[in-house]
Image (cartoon, rainbow, N blue to C red; front, side):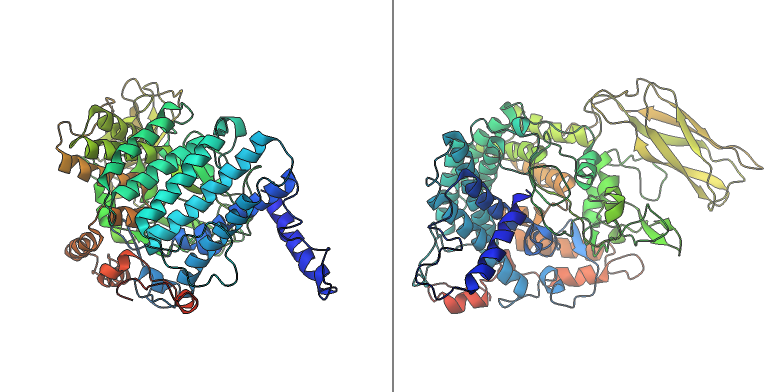
Length: 630
């Protein structure tokens, strides 16, 4: 939203122009609530200002997608546990930490800006539908900021109008009441935003009616979970998830990785991504900011080489976990060190390589050790060339994706009906079908060696060609051990688009002949289109575990895993069990593990379910009570 800069400029002009006449009894040359909000344009500028907070560095620009969510069973830090920022993901923070103070301050700033806008919404003479659209978005943004506060801090003060100077000591409102007000705001927003759809806008980084409905489903899901545990709310999750599903406005992108490539390339995927927080660099409708760290700290590691225009900068301070890697189904007959996965999501999310560099070019290097693999979901190599050298780039943040709605529905159906219904299976299987790449046709399933041949070199492996079978887009690399080809690694199982073409029969695999020796041979199979289906007949407990695993596979690195573990009620026990699992599975092996990440896991205890209320706020607000353990 370009208007955000205009609003900031007006603020700056206000400060400087009013300084010369600050002693005037009735100042007239700067904006206040009394002489602003007089036109529709001024309401829109104010709304843009509320949006702009969301991608600030201490919000989703860095902290919420990195610092507060990077020690779970899907991702752990790999840096030494020192420095102010690193204390957050090593669970060594306290109530005086600046980032925690900002995570309290910035949502309340957004809430205050929304409150002022809502209080003045009826001032200008304007089109009533447009007035309703602005108010509906403001209500959503207020609700979302309260959702951030209560899921991170628990009970928090509920403030619905700009407080007076004397309104300092404001007690916290119980979390259940916070959820109730969030729902109230969202339901009013749903009415006001009727007809405001992603289809009518053409972009998704402003709030639409299905964004409201998806958010209602999410709020009810959290309300049903720990610590409030009002399980009656699971029925409401189904109600609002169904509204999104039945709207016909959303569907899964047939290619999982393309969802995140589109984000890097500033392309709106309004079908898959129900709502994004916008950042500069995209089309109309997004929020201008100076940059963010999406794909940097939690990204595929690389350094920028000035002479190589394909290179980019990403620090990759966070690594995946073996639990995440192993959660994806594999081909048991694969001869690769890390067996090939039947799930296309694994090798995108968990790349077994990184980019090193020489003085002139970036170099792709193998990284077979699972504990040391980068988080590959957001890949800056797909960002515009001019921005690759920077540590920051303006990638939009996916707030709610359609797959999340499907998984919320599946989870709630299982809870409401004391076991999975057909609707629950249909929802989770729709996500899995896309994950396996077979939503619209069949792709290559396996490539098996017949004869490894002789005379090959690991330093210069032979070219693998895939031809025939009716499909396109499949690519592979040969793995050479000694002088023989010992495996074929699929780098693409085929073209994943709505129209295909897909494979109707097994393609031919051709391995280039060595200079001297015997040519290697291999054969391929294609999918049947049923591999994705979850085991039928699961009971309630086993289906719930399947949901937990599927959410990790699908939503990893999107800042939801810690919150999921908390609302499922066993965060500390789950993390302690994972710590034991990690130790038993090589995390503390210096050559192939992640000793730094292991230290981060060891410090988690019950107090980390919520963040501490900031010291500065406790000093100001004497009615506020600190969270236990701090």
